[in-house]
Length: 101
Image (tube, rainbow, N blue to C red; front, side, top):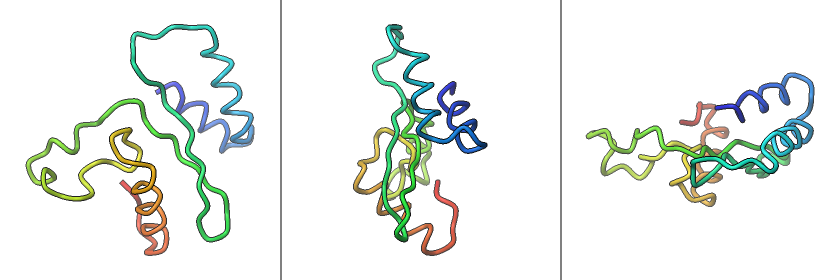
């Protein structure tokens, strides 16, 4: 969740490139008892470069009984979702004016 703080600072004025640089500097040379870390995913939507943070964890939304057989069972930020599907879903949500999950 620390990476989310860096992104919030980036959106508030530091700038996202500077926020990701600060994140990378903060974790440089450290070891973590986890197999993955959050990562930056940039994509183009409506002619603008946008980005999200792909989480390093699963919220287990996909384990809920009513989500089990749905194509969109994984959150857009979940590491279990493919980048191709993630970007397509984000573009679709933005085009529909909806919030992405």
